[in-house]
Image (cartoon, rainbow, N blue to C red):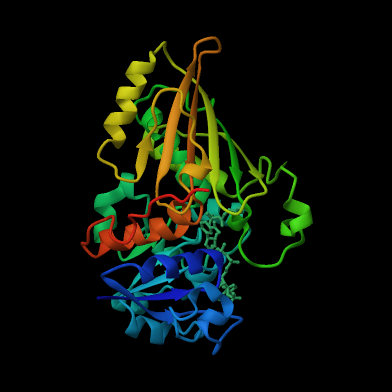
Length: 346
Ligand SMILES: NC(=O)C1=CN([C@@H]2O[C@H](COP(=O)(O)OP(=O)(O)OC[C@H]3O[C@@H](n4cnc5c(N)ncnc54)[C@H](OP(=O)(O)O)[C@@H]3O)[C@@H](O)[C@H]2O)C=CC1
Ligand SMILES: CC(=O)N[C@@H](CCC(=O)OP(=O)(O)O)C(=O)O
């Protein structure tokens, strides 16, 4: 049995990790970390866990946790994981960080976009970007995983085959994305109050969102070119879900069949990426509660652009599901263990 500790188990991403790990046949949770609920029963925070989890929340003692756990998930705000990582800790346990601390290889770029001083830049090089479909072999050998961001996961997987095949002008990409409110976390913020979010849709972080450099980096690695793009997220009045609609100029005339063959060749062996049938647009409701990313594309012959689309659950493939997928790879398990979740509807 893999012993798992979760720092930040009382947040939205953390509670989703608890839900998934409870159903994992090779893992058990040994540490329900919290900052605000120390010594309180976990089910007092999340009553869906009544008579399922009897443990109490514990503080974030990384030294003790590293001794107890084979893997530690940090589902905490930016900057916390980097303050905990050390050679001593990594010699005892593996870390899967759900925050952005180790996602961006250039520390200056991280500090500029996140307005934070990185606490352990010496580990950035070692950290593996945990986008399983792309970095699978490196993940298997890793001690420290930078679990990808939710928007970057959906955006990168939607665009990746076109970028890798050199079929689009990499400096013409515009990504329009939408997220449910759980993406903003459980902490109380005026912008996320019911009356602020309900019956409303708005853009935020326009031209400044912190996921921009992460998506640019991943698409640069894929295409071998330095990518600069526009990324505009929107907040929508639903609990879960991310929808990406991305636009790019095609470098040459291509047919639907050619591009479909390319998407299929990249993803036909990928359990969690579903390339939809012709003219079917991805919808968040068809992936909710599951680890699937649904992708598709449409060629607009009139404008010479391709429109690439993706939908996924921000808390599953966008956070906890992908983290468990990473854990499975790191421990030599079936990658899908604990993740064969059928999407829920309605
Ligand atoms: N929500 C999402 O869809 C996604 C989130 N992520 C990332 O996962 C991480 C967690 O996000 P999310 O669950 O949404 O956030 P929440 O605000 O819902 O939860 C944050 C968690 O971190 C704990 N925490 C907060 N501050 C500290 C601190 N200073 N020291 C220790 N623990 C602390 C909280 O503890 P307590 O409750 O006890 O105060 C809580 O358990 C973030 O880095 C986020 O970017 C990644 C992908 C998607
Ligand atoms: C709706 C909303 O606010 N979403 C968050 C992104 C989700 C998240 O927590 O970001 P990571 O994937 O980088 O960890 C945001 O825009 O900052």
